Image 1 (cartoon, rainbow, N blue to C red):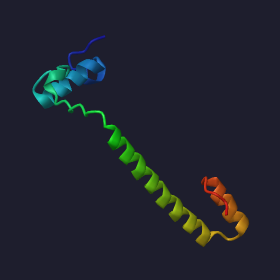
Image 2: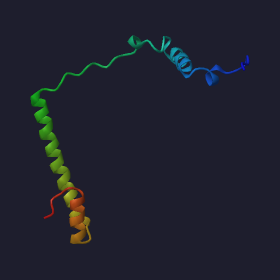
Image 3: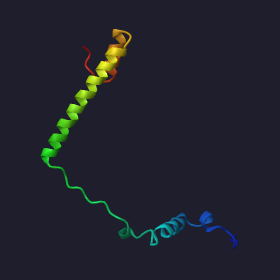
Length: 94
């Protein structure tokens, strides 16, 4: 059943509604992908950059582990709780 005053945004195709919405915003066609700005393709990192990132990540992990160990040692109520928390976070039990 079709009514003259029927709202096409509610009863029409979702794709048609979206295309109409995008064309209102952009003044162009919504499915024209060349219209939109494309992000530049980033080059692959060199081996040196990969090694530097690995070094940076290992240093960061050392700092986080040190901080976590200090917090656990400071706030643990017993040595059993401390050992359980160290084990839970993958740190060596002393």
